[in-house]
Image 1 (cartoon, rainbow, N blue to C red):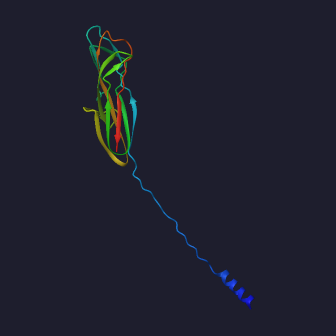
Image 2 (image 1 turned 30 degrees about the horizontal axis):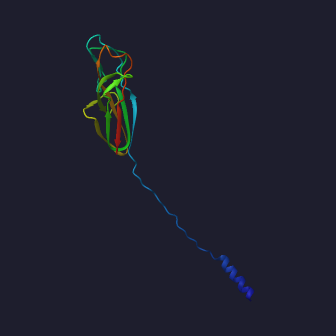
Length: 180
């Protein structure tokens, strides 16, 4: 009888389902994309070749707004280019661009006076507006958007005389951007 009861208990146990349960967590992390800005140099500022005046002094100018070159008291030749940088931004609501000009372009020792100018546009080759301060502030579309803004650099090299040494005179225009 005990054997029969044990068999019956085993048969009941074999037919009984055991219920199990567990949970799986679901998670998502939301973030706001950070604003980023990147400069790309499109052109360096190049005044071309300038023939020194035999008397007096001369100067050469490149307009930041038009890109046109002109001179006074000196003959210029060769090609010239207005300096240009592109500012590419993503997820930007506002941005500030600053620039610093050298006071002179120099060869190894001699300086030529330099006075820089700059201009901005939303297109690469036209619509440039002169900027009269050392900073420019703009707005963009914010999160999920991309913008492209252009800045051109020109200026005047002056005080070119017969006694200035031959050679290439250089300087660096520094540009920085803060984006938020």
